[in-house]
Image (tube, rainbow, N blue to C red; front, side):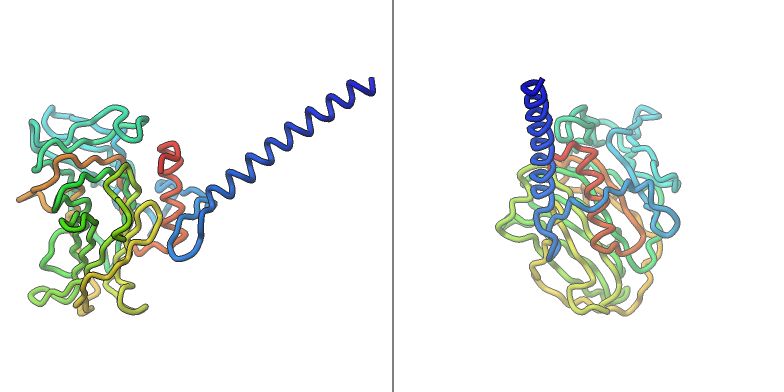
Length: 295
């Protein structure tokens, strides 16, 4: 009996020790850095649909929920229930193609087969003086390929996040000033970071406000890590109202799109306010969980 008791005690002790070791190791591995915009996956996950009122997403779409209701238009379901979602009403090879197991090998993705492929909001989005986005995408090594665009670039609040040529980086351009006298700020991803290597979580926060100094008007993140190398800036704040805008994912416009071939989209969520770090990382963590912790 004493021997059996000893065996049971050792078994339980090893089992508990293994569980604790896994828990501790996993926790340490997931909490890689909490300062300066680095990843913190110990924060709670936040399903965008759990955000209500002024914090609710104005656009929320997943490639898993695609439809082609008329056989021509490709539309992602309006998960947020706001009346607007991402859609392409161009038929044939120009519309993004739903690809099973295309995103991280587990979920649907929308594959842009043509330089003129796009997904754009079905109606203009009211943005006030700020907005944020979190998206899961794969960007090809293709100059001028655009991941995110807020129309238009001749009015304050317009935005482009696109691939530069040499070196290959993502560049975020945000427009301020006033119509007729536009100013802008331009920031690049860190040159040492290869954003074209795999699926990423791409996030950005933008506001017509310089209350916290130059650079506070826009912040861009790749996989939760701040990418904020200043390229140039003439950004000024004259007006703090953006009005209603069309948002385009994977191209820089719907009227004259170009350079989208090879872009892939898994998920997109947009919010009509400037997310703080905890809000942004919690939504990023939700997408990490949704896609099986692939990034």
